[in-house]
Image (cartoon, rainbow, N blue to C red; front, side, top):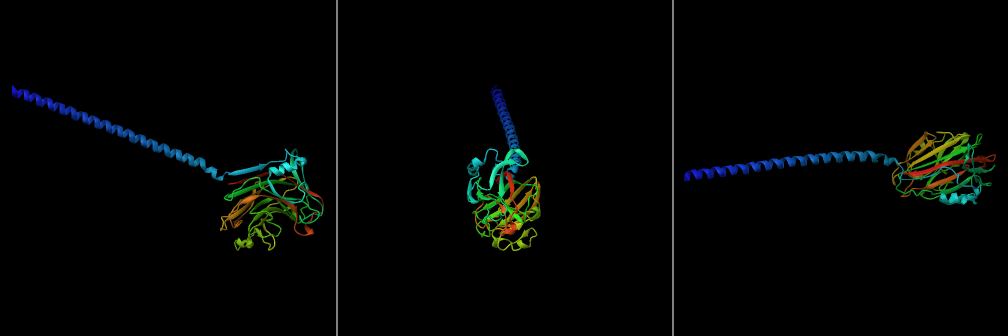
Length: 327
């Protein structure tokens, strides 16, 4: 009898042991499944993160080519001759060079091709050429309508200019461009601490850029480049004849400056007339210290330094559609 009770106890203990073992096995299985789910969740999270990163990169890419800052001036519709000072203030004109009275040689008039729009007209009286001669023709001023930082990589300047049908280009004349460092970087002056990139018209309406840049800092082969005409006393003529100024219709001209790294000959200028690239010139030095584009060098006159450049009759040019940007 005692033997039978002992045997029953042994069976009961064994049974309980098997239940505990079974419970332990079940717990491990549950833990394994839970671990598997956790791993799956992590994998899903990584996949989502990768996709998000790709989209951000794809979306951000165009930002590198868009402007960091911009300014535009489509026309003079909101202004008249009586409000001359107001548009000059809006342009942030820092120096009016000529004529000495800022109200001379320009007027706000109807667009010669669209009477509903007002544009700026500039006057060149007969016999005028360089600004220091008499009579004074054209206008010249420096404007900073956009604060362009020295670390700007590329600066783009666009404007439209109109020459009347039958316009007499004589030997040539100046048109607006950009400047940096300080003003008065022209007229045979030293360009070691400044630069200017005015445009020009030449005989028969040939177009070009007229650069004042530090001469001693340029690559030694610059004057052998087919795009460049060197002058020991004045600026570099760049891209002469790569495009022609139209008469009787508006010309859209765009100048793109890639500023050089200080100490490097890695600057460039691109000139675009209408929708066509006229030329691109690289390996340039615009600056030798850390300054950038200061603004617009709005100069226009016949010349040239001698009376051979003078306009024989009263003539006009017209301006509209200006914009300035950097990135």
